[in-house]
Length: 171
Image 1 (cartoon, rainbow, N blue to C red):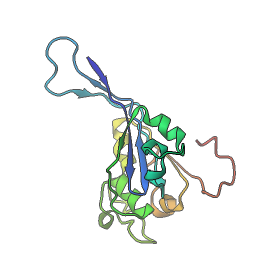
Image 2 (image 1 turned 180 degrees about the vertical axis):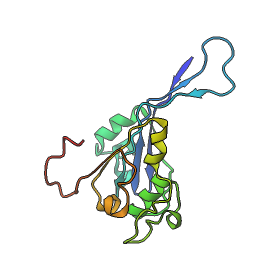
Image 3 (image 1 turned 60 degrees about the vertical axis):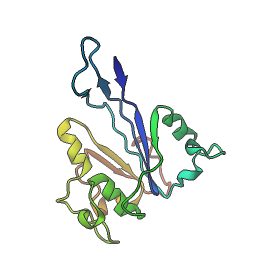
Image 4 (image 1 turned 90 degrees about the horizontal axis):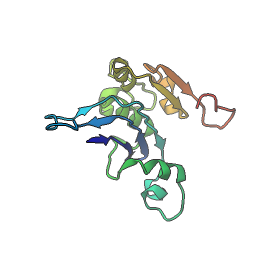
């Protein structure tokens, strides 16, 4: 039969991540199943990061008040990983580690004024050869162009978090 690979929601310390994957995991309906399932390329991968979000205050994680109705609705088709860990508690360095797979000492964005090392492999550049179009919408200056986070995305939008302006056309 055919098994659908669902969506995954991940909490990493003070950073919440969500990966929406519409990919399919196929096993042949006739004859013996293949030795290893074939994973088809997902249609969409979404990484949603929120700094300083308390996971224990989200209704999706069992908090008694309805604090996160949209996330709760999304999680109905998702996996919620309750024990995930970050390399650091600081937004810039934690996001750099998430998007490079490198420890803070290796990606270059571990200090207040430091930026991503341009020689460290970066997630959008890894997805592009597989045919993905990549885009980022950022509201934190810590993960903005100044510190090297705009590189390699097909589209990168920095929206200052002060709430000024209508950004609905970007989103």
